Length: 161
Image (cartoon, rainbow, N blue to C red; front, side):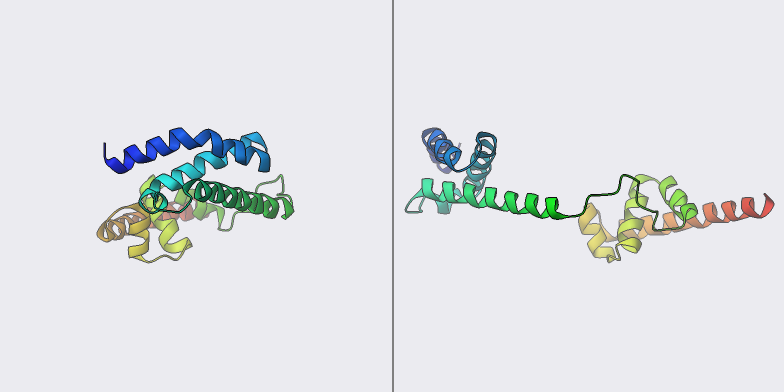
């Protein structure tokens, strides 16, 4: 175990209860526990600079308070939004196309959605999915072939029936 990790562990063991007690004065106990944990995770990630801070405990407490403030803001914003309808949203695409897309294998469907519905580049799609750009291109080709065949079959069924 590295020296940095050992010094962080000692700091955490020595200060976690103190930080929790401080935070539990400022917020409900459940929120204080979550904010304490989050702040110590952030301190661990930045331990090399936090340990040199003039007041590492103050840094952790401030980080926890900022974290809780951000959570509170998000909850307030979400609470102020109009309530969601209990009925599902309308399909943005033709139901036949949606059915054909849903029939694609998962990775092909992900590629099509990111490339064409989200209008991302091949490189952006590859980065998001953690695959090579050439793999994205191959999935696009395969999925377009499958979709053409499926839509052609559906069109033929509609004409007959």
